Amino acid sequence: MDISIGELSRRTAVKVATIRYYESVALVPCPPRSEGRQRRYGEHEVSRLSFIRHARELGFDIEAIRELLAMSAQPDQSCAEADRIARRHMAEVDRRISQLTALRAELQRMVEACGHGRVGDCRVIETLANHDQCEHASH
Image (tube, rainbow, N blue to C red; front, side, top):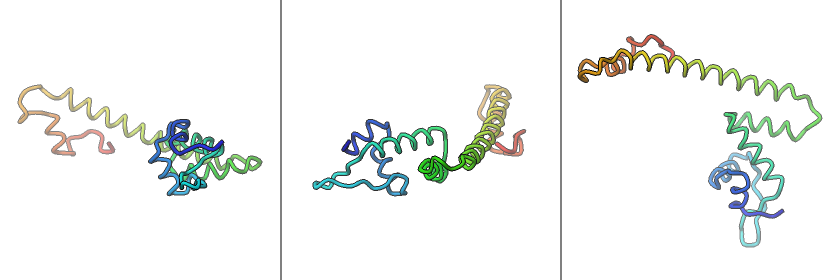
């Protein structure tokens, strides 16, 4: 296979600018170029970019993806490190869910306390102006 960056983008659902970014941070190796200086990609890049896109959709950061890609190149090694990376990410997701739950509760409390009168008496405006009125300091 010998495809252009546009075709790679179409096949992987990753924008051309994002592909170029991944090349600039060495997540995807810079491809060979044609005589006309056009980037040319093969099946390996399609697979690698699909892996990266899926990992990004799951919220993994670039460094975690870099580590996971390096591990995938050594299929006979233990997957304990991949498991550790996934567990670390899951703990971060749980932390964010907790923060979002507190945020939602605070917003709900603010909206329910609003008397729908004048802005000068608005509980939403009051709470936003004074963080001490929040029940959840960690939002």
